[in-house]
Length: 222
Ligand SMILES: Cc1cc2nc3c(=O)[nH]c(=O)nc-3n(C[C@H](O)[C@H](O)[C@H](O)COP(=O)(O)OP(=O)(O)OC[C@H]3O[C@@H](n4cnc5c(N)ncnc54)[C@H](O)[C@@H]3O)c2cc1C
Image 1: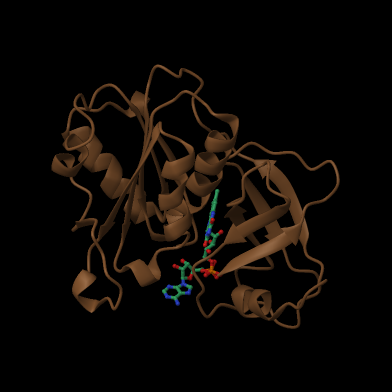
Image 2 (image 1 turned 90 degrees about the vertical axis):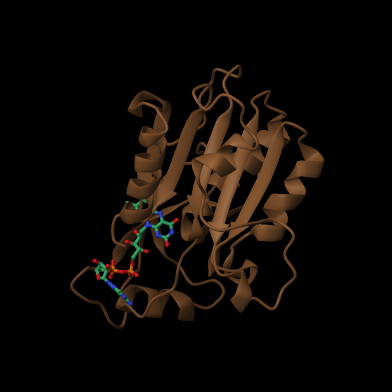
């Protein structure tokens, strides 16, 4: 579920940063309290502030999803340094599963708008196209930015009702090598639940990529 907030006047952030979001006087709460961190999924040039979450049955999210238009929430931020590197001679490779897409939506849309010179590769893994947040939009950015390549992959396509022409199965070094001739050239980025981030790092390390070339953002709480 995506949540659109009116952007406070003068609020500035860099693509990839996150917010702390607090509910104000919620009718129920639980042991985790009234605040969660969410990456800003919208790009800085967009009008709204957007965050997106995998919805589960926790007190915070039960309240969040019932908020009506013009409800107020408290935000603090922006925080974090999970932002695109400045050396345009090095490609950025984004390795993403599921809800970890949020910072990359912001980075990819802002990069297209700013016409940055980096080569960008998004490897985006989901069970089915139906489950993949921002899928169509992220694919379409290819038309705006010839330096950007979208590589979607589905791990449970048999259970899908939607046609799919892209890759299937998990992201593997072999899949990366179809697009990137020298795996040691780019800087790699991955975000999401800690388990997913750990798997991506292990895969990259096993392919000879050192931690200096891997940037991660862990969505602790999953
Ligand atoms: C920098 C940063 C950026 C983040 N960005 C995002 C983002 O863009 N989008 C996003 O969705 N999240 C993001 N998160 C994670 C987010 O802050 C929450 O922790 C997460 O969404 C879980 O919140 P919750 O209310 O569902 O569970 P919580 O109430 O926070 O869960 C508490 C504990 O209970 C367990 N738990 C709760 N419900 C279930 C369930 N149904 N099944 C199994 N276990 C359960 C959890 O594993 C956890 O250990 C980010 C976190 C950080 C630190």
